[in-house]
Image 1 (cartoon, helix red, strand yellow):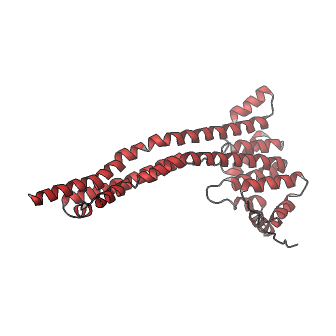
Image 2 (tube, one colour):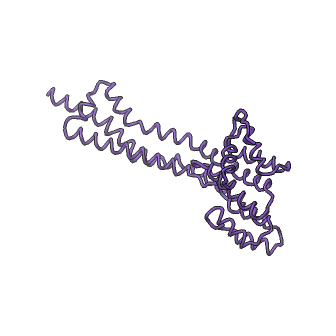
Image 3 (cartoon, one colour):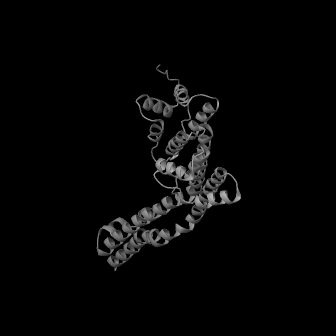
Length: 297
């Protein structure tokens, strides 16, 4: 039966889709019908999934194809869906766990971007300092442009200043980019391993499923599983706690990188931007004065 599309909802974020899907599943709605209900409610991602499934594509693959850019939430949902379906784990709690993980990762990224906003803006502003020096010389009545375009001394100042300006801008941009680098969804493999174990499969089988879903093996799960065995506590909860701790550590590391960025940006400022300002702003004014004085004499 074809679906009639309602007016699209304002929010189409992956976390919102995951949570609404989990609510429908907890209410007893079958997974295919849950996707159809979301599509009918105007969710464009759900509409794409429904269309892909109608064409014979598995749900996990259809969801994975929603992933674009740097947002890993759809790929995480696809991996969780695949693991949960294979082991028979409850879908609703699994999706809620992944939604919480994705939302936590998004919040951490937002906090880092906010912390980086001020030093990044300062770096961009300081990058214009050489051009401001050149314009200042012209505004004060010096023939700075003429000096830079005539004579070996002017050519040398122009070439060195331009090179230093470009290097300083790229250096600053690289520092900002590295400070804001994300790590996907930290702890995702631990969450997926917890989902697999909640379905009652063996540890080896659970690891195999995680590898098939993500393309990489769980890393630091061995100590957690050993602790679970020795202490006699559920490995699922320990793995989820480990995943939450990994996200906390990544958030803290991101804040530290943002805090250190302001001091790191002093390097391109001192090595490139300020010398470029002197070469393009101050040196041409001095050369102009010397040239004028020589002609006068």
